[in-house]
Amino acid sequence: MSFESCAALVERADPDRFAALMSAPVAVRRVCFPLYAFNIEVSRAPWVTKEPMIAEMRLQWWRDALEEIGQGRGRRHEVVDALGPVLDPRAADDLDALVAARRWDVYTDAFEDMAAFDGYIEDTSGLLLWTAVRLCGQVSEDTRTDVLRYGFGVGVANWLRAIPQLQDRGRIPLVDGTPQGVRDLAERALSDMKHAKSNLRHVSAPARAVLRSGWRAEATLRAARDIPERVIEGQLDESPFARKLRLMVLSARGAF
Image 1 (cartoon, rainbow, N blue to C red):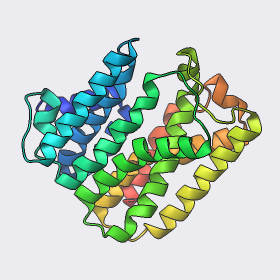
Image 2: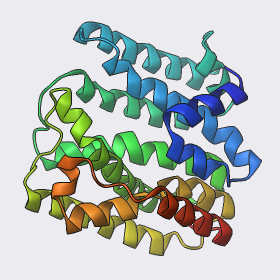
Image 3: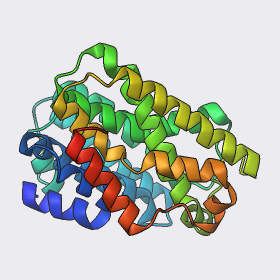
């Protein structure tokens, strides 16, 4: 898959990240569009079949592909072709953990506890964001914890928006789905984002452009905290005008 095809896939399947990337420098787009196209393909893999064994095989295919990329090899596949030149061995290892975490999506089991839920969100959202920031942003290793915390908040926000669809598919998406449980989760994710943003305020412009992929998260989390019932109702979205204005302001300020 060419860079342009990766961008088109992200535009169709992940419009929030696509919108954020369109305000980013070209060099950031060159890294992130293949990364996000990969993420789309992996996130879809457990859902395209009702047979757990087939879903596991699909995820294993991606783990094998990442191992080959880390070894300087590759396989013929439209996303892998674009992803291979972007990743270094460390990125391939980190993304392997992302693919492994997606095994939860194969089955209908609930998360064992909050630690298991947190681990899933950190691996599927935080590691994706950290990989993109590290490859694009000229950041030090000291920023990793804060990028993961910020990515955790972004992941929780995305997860809360997906709750109605997950429940329709027979999943038990929350450890504590009561209104107070939702409120506590949203508040914790907001706190993580606030502290992370404070610590990351001096990162490079390319890193800030990558972090801007979470531009909708704080508004979503505040809505879930203030009226938890909106999560089940699927009513967490701001108006299109408010979303457009928010991204325009962040982009103009070079903020996230």
